Image (spheres, rainbow, N blue to C red):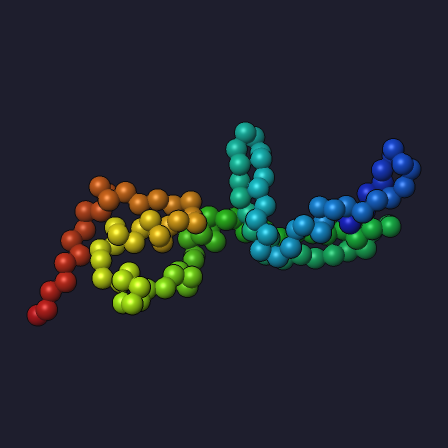
Length: 116
């Protein structure tokens, strides 16, 4: 993306405001063949071209980033009364800001704890 472009209406180069909005870890949405794709900007490189700077963006698929999250933003504490329940009780809070959802009907595992 160029930092400046030629505006034929005024006959001069003008600053490209979009180049200021894209930074590292920005989410980019691409509409391609009637589908939406989401990416995160991971690297930005610059190259001087004529009267502007040409930015090249390296992106990573947002689904890969979502799957690799480790949950460091969550806090489980006895004082908050949020650490002594089943996994289904936490799903609403844990998945609140993600694209994932939890369906308890598909939870067929037996997670009962036993002492031997």
